[in-house]
Image (tube, rainbow, N blue to C red; front, side, top):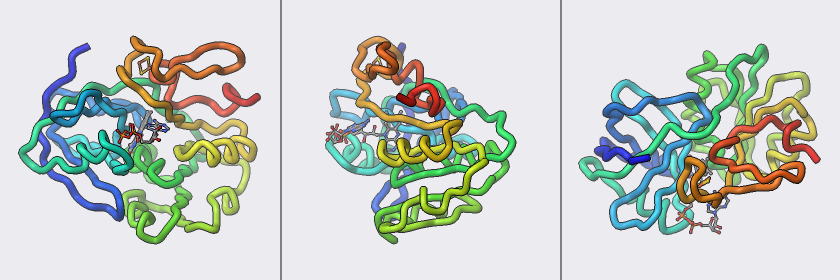
Length: 223
Ligand SMILES: Cc1cc2nc3c(=O)[nH]c(=O)nc-3n(C[C@H](O)[C@H](O)[C@H](O)COP(=O)(O)OP(=O)(O)OC[C@H]3O[C@@H](n4cnc5c(N)ncnc54)[C@H](O)[C@@H]3O)c2cc1C
Ligand code: FES
């Protein structure tokens, strides 16, 4: 699989995160929850990023600069070029009757595109500070909680939960809502099944999260 070369059209600060916009060219935007491998110039490996928004002619990614790869992506400016491959993996199932989007921290990233696809259903977003919570404005119809309040404290049962966030949040959500769809993370080197870098054991079987996921049904991973 060959990545495409894409031009950066803009980069905006959203709290501690960067919303990186690239020209779409011939790339499909895919299903919400799918991801793209983005590689900044001079970096040895691409990094997986969920599609955040798909305005006409663009793809946009919300990036948390936590290490060298993400910092290099956040440093890109309009006119720079990057390598991009995708859409990859399995996204959220959109055939849901009572959708409720649940996001924690940078797990908010795939929710704006998902919200657009589902007609702006209610969302619950949790952040560690008001600064991080600035990203909530990307998701219409969202209730925002800031630590020490957790999203699970305001989640009422009986809804079709579509979630993305840190592992402890996903585990807590799946206990409350066993039918939830959860977007998981693992370090990824290729993004399309070739390297086994993202392999996780589920019920004694090795699964590549980039191929089987990143979105999995909570009951599929429950112990
Ligand atoms: C399918 C998928 C979608 C993602 N979407 C987004 C997104 O939209 N926005 C965003 O900011 N990030 C997203 N991530 C996470 C992002 O890819 C990682 O933060 C990034 O690869 C880290 O690279 P780095 O070089 O900056 O830091 P590194 O130096 O590689 O890592 C910094 C620290 O984070 C840990 N780490 C790195 N990658 C992961 C991971 N995937 N899971 C758990 N721990 C990790 C490392 O062990 C290390 O402690 C996604 C990950 C996956 C698998
Ligand atoms: S990232 Fe290479 S197999 Fe999943």
